[in-house]
Length: 123
Image (cartoon, rainbow, N blue to C red; front, top):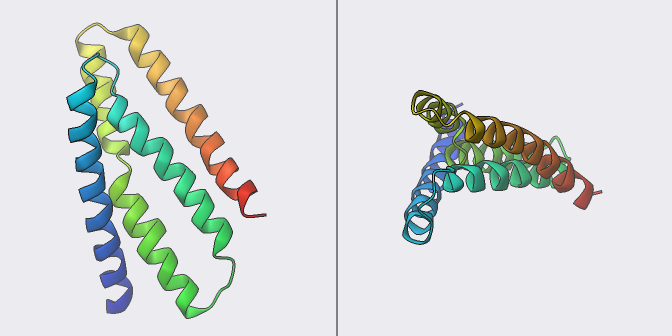
């Protein structure tokens, strides 16, 4: 149990750091209202989760540890669904209803598509 917790923690730390760096770089080059950095990490995280899940098909202890490290830890720390929800509420409160609708539909559709593509690549 402690080993799995360590894998999740290490992966989560790495994912969180990469998410932060994505926000920094995106903010440097993009200043519009659409929450592009969160959109990028959510779609990339969905793709990685699908890809990793498709690649790691064994039920061995090592394979399960990689899933804890990469899917639960890294992808969990990297993706930002809570930030996605908060940004939508903030956009709604500021009257950006059109952006809320576009962002929500695009995030869900692209996220599902990214997971599917990740799985297809591994087959």
